[in-house]
Length: 495
Ligand code: NAD
Image 1 (tube, rainbow, N blue to C red):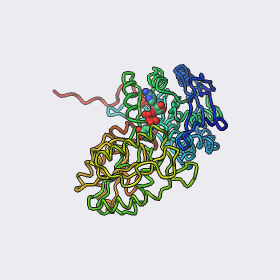
Image 2: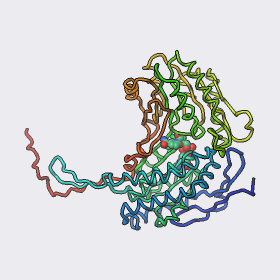
Image 3: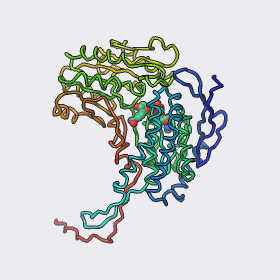
Image 4: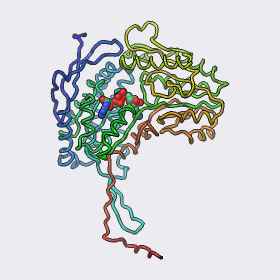
């Protein structure tokens, strides 16, 4: 253990104060670029969960939070974003050490909290918090969008800052109180939200923050005083949570995995493919839910496209995530590294060809590095073409008829993102109209925009984050009927 440089934090942020965890709740965090422990960080216990939920309940039911105006709450969220931005290098570098995400992306994640707060500040006044509506009977009603209550915001390790922000910014603005439950892998960096809550003076219980293991996390989602679970993570965990909360009829949004496909049409420009696909499937070291990891190419263009892609991919810089020149860092941990190698082996066993990459890059003997990998020659039902890999692996499949391509693109459990490459917008629109995915990109691998709703069809999730739609999961609609009886008499029923 490199004790000289070991970072230690041992408190979780619960109910407006820092609470020390027991020694056996401190975990070692391993830097995936060195394979060495760089920090010890705290996990919350079941008792911490109980305390955080009780405080969130009180702060929601009888605390000052809802008494503040939306503008006052928004100002606090903007201040929270500003505070994180002011320490973005420090927190971003902790996130980098936890996961190996390249430095610009890691620090950018911290900045994204301020970015989302600024965006929401620019649109929230136009949200229909209160409206009047006359019903078909003539009755006058007032519709109000009221906060849903206590929110458990559960985040994955790959983008914890932006995905905590996508939950707590709309939730707290609406008047909810929230608990950020981070992945154990982010047990250090996510305490940043506690620092920020303390710094801006959020009332106790409005925001608690901690990482936790399975038992305490399960306790949180099942807690009867939690009204809503906002989850981003794997479909496996999403299904466990959905089952756990079903009987309680908790509000639930799920942002899950993906196996996004790009359909290359006959007239697609190779330049657009080369400009967008290599950075697309390797973003976040290939650990991005919406990464386009399947390319469907016309059979007669396969060799041309595969070879051009292999050449482009070989110019990506794989290495130290702290070096700004690096495009692709290590996988986030040993388990992830072994898992990705297992997928590559399964592809070879299924008759696939490793066109480039396929394992550890030359010269990088330490760290969980895998070279960006392109595989072709497998069928659409191969494991590597069906399951989410979460690593820098692109599978290229060929097709004869466009119908086949659309069927293959839609032929996984997922439906998060998709793409169409072509020269004719009318044709691309016709294909896009048949994609069973939450987003379709023309001549682009994938991108996200906080003004545009993001989410999935099918096993990629339920609900949307970002855009004005990102506020919807944090409100309930209450209709107040203002007239005792309808003004317009009901039409007589004729027999
Ligand atoms: P994961 O499902 O293993 O864990 C996600 C979170 O759930 C973590 O905080 C974890 O501690 C927690 N958790 C685990 N068991 C739980 C339980 N029983 N009850 C409550 N919480 C529990 O996912 P991960 O490995 O951290 O993240 C990678 C996954 O996230 C990938 O599948 C990726 O596609 C997905 N993801 C989706 C999006 C999206 O917006 N759709 C974005 C990023 C990542």
